[in-house]
Amino acid sequence: MSILSVTEMTQGFGDNIIFDNVSFQLSKGEHIGLIGANGKGKTTFMRLITNEILPDSGTISWSRKANVGYMDQNVELNTFLTVKEVLQSSFKKLFVLDEELKVLYEKMTYLKGKELEQVLKKTSYIQSELDMSDFYGINSKIEAISAGMGVRDLLDKNPRELSGGQRTKILLAKLLLEKPDILLLDEPTNHLDEKNIVWLKGFLTNYENAFILISHDTEFLNSVVNCIYHLENKKLTKFPGNYDKFLMLYDQKKKNMMTQYYKQQEEIQKLEAYIRKNQVRTATAAQAKSRGRKLEKIVRIKLDESIPNPHFHFKFSSNPTDLIFETKNLIIGYDRPLTKPMNLIMRRNDKIALVGANGIGKTTLLKSLMAIITPIAGKIQLGEFLDIGYYRQEIESESEIEEIVLNNVWKEFSDFSIQEVRKIISQCGLSAKHTEMKLQSISGGEQAKVRLCKIINKKSNVLFLDEPTNHLDTMAKDELKRALIEYEGSIVLVSHEQEFYKDIVTKVWNCENFKV
Image (tube, rainbow, N blue to C red; front, side):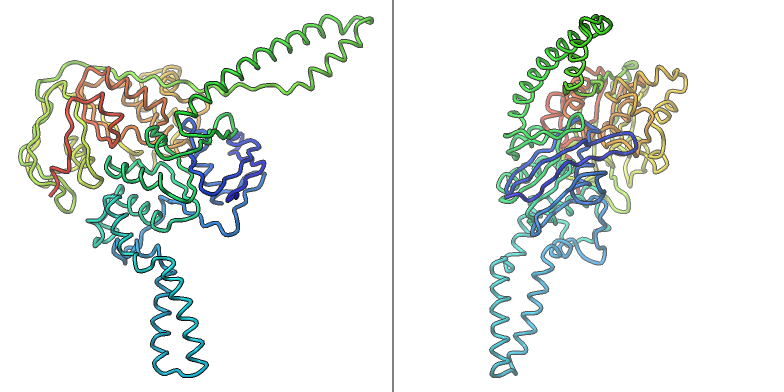
């Protein structure tokens, strides 16, 4: 049974065509992994099928009864409720029915005859609805999902007290509690720690309804999907199986296409050569004209648009002192302490992963070491001759998002020529077209590559990297891993992806051990 039908959908922004005549059907129970390189339209795809934007042409039709659940990062949580009450609002209709049932039970104390009979029928119907929906198990469901998402300790808090990562977890938990016919998930693991990712993996594997999942975490995809939608060259192609099976089928498809392409090119060249040679001769003009008609009818095979492969190389400056940093009774936080006193030490050539749940101070620790924020208590001693390269999770300011990519990078390297700036942008896997676009007009993965471009082209001997793999496609992530293994300096890396950091780091600091 089809839940969603998309027919001949075309969508673009100006002269940038994202989808060209795309058609597909989504069936009940399908677990879809939506993949493609950064900037190929994955988030635009979600915006289209949720009617956030309309296609230029074509139709998008949902089944009339389909209940669609989409985690919109921009939704504001109600700050007049506790986190638990926010999660309970997933069952708002059931709570309304329960209140109605209580009113009817009160009425039954004074009604008689036919009126009582009618109320009894209605209470029986409502009670049946509540039982079928497992209304009386709501608190157990909230406990189970909030524990799985790592937010059980936040249930009594007000949403305004939450960090960005915690807020995202609450939105995701609320969506999972609603159990829609189709879940639309855009990189749900970005703000989850390893334990939460394992739990979500199990939840989605056993999810009886359909979902479409955008993720660059190939291990996660392999565990939960049974079908791949691949976006490339303005088209969507469906492949059965998980990500590993897709790679095998896609490789075979590319080989077949290349064989057909070269065969077709050979035929085209022969026809064109014959036409050039014979169209001016009276005796052979008719045959040349016939070959010309044949040439016009050929549906030409188009090879995929060329996107530069990213190449990352972090420039090393020179050795600093043996001590990189040492903290003494350091307490970090904003309005309140996030940690107990920490006594930490990092030495030259250490490569350290900071792991642990969101909201416990990993980013705050980096910012404290960088003197971006002031510690609540304690001291930080930095070594000498440090050249620190700092990668932020997000764009620094609201005004920056309006900047053209070329200008945004160039202002960091004012002594470079425009050709040199274009070259370093290209080396990070961005096309010439991207350099002329505003940061707000490119994807999250492409924005991440711009930030990486600025850090890899400045000499450093220490890297502070805050979730650098968020939004990066698989190719860029693999290349970043290679570059960090090769890097001669010291690294502090915030990451939830053990598969990414395990071959890079020499130490793992679990920040759960530092929390208050």
